[in-house]
Image 1 (tube, rainbow, N blue to C red):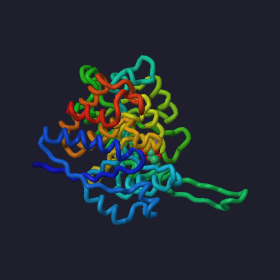
Image 2 (spheres, rainbow, N blue to C red):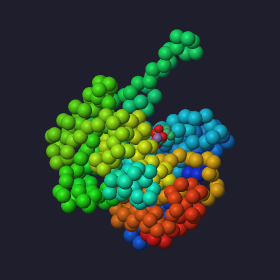
Image 3 (tube, rainbow, N blue to C red):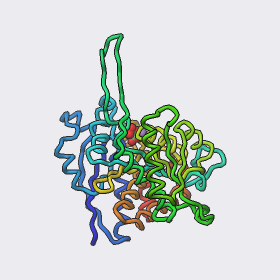
Image 4 (cartoon, protein in one colour):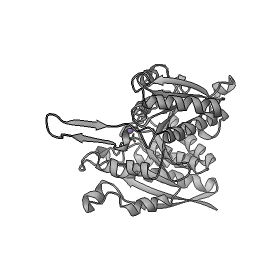
Length: 368
Ligand code: IPM
Ligand code: MN
């Protein structure tokens, strides 16, 4: 039987609890679709750091490199200075494993959970592709005259033609796939009926960041015109993008953007799809080790209370299966999540679901 080896990094706060439910669901789906999952757990995170001062040893990065996929819970501990674990674990893995795409579907499963007036699942259904290895996240920059009145802090946005291009190509491919209606990035039924073209929107700031987004824009049109003429090209400034997310989310199909803008717009994206309880993402290296995570963070105040919503982690698990080629199992999990959301839950927020964390996991597992 086909076996996939998966590294599991529960991490901090509610991370381990939600990952446990994701594994429960994955294990329910696997036998029905003829494959097995083999898990190896790693305990990196705040607790281990406070105990041993070890963040992520080099050897661990090499160990993780051996896996096709990592399932990650959350990183961030209230007793550890902000940035230490985020940079030392999460960002380090994204960078060293060259997970150059951060794939964040923004999909509303039930109109009840959308804070936007008159918008439902038909309107809120797009994908954000965030460049994940460059931009303002590389740590390039520094201080001059630190701690004096003349202090200067520089934080540089790094945009390489190679890095931008590989991200754009992934985005064009994704847009093309949505039109083909493949797997769970499937084109909306209505659009397919109307024979609508898939569309890729570049989200930038060409009116101010005239070097970085000049490069992005040129690469976007060059690649699009030569290799993806079937994908409609569209552009929106990042500030306008946040406005459209609220006003006309149905205008979007696939959005591609840089690391910082992608970070910001996907939090807004999470809110319009029902909140952090449901939002999942994948850090993708198409040729190497990819890492899937709920995007909500470690939520320390809910730790161990059986109240956190595990659906985001479960959806991250589904994305992982999709990535591993188990597209049917991924679709089955997504369908089960949709049913649970429709038929069972009172809310997607922690403590208000009408069920506990484990019970939500049981419900999804029973429906896959
Ligand atoms: C995210 C998070 C991270 C980021 C933090 C925790 C470093 O906000 O995954 O969006 O900024 O990328
Ligand atoms: Mn973020």
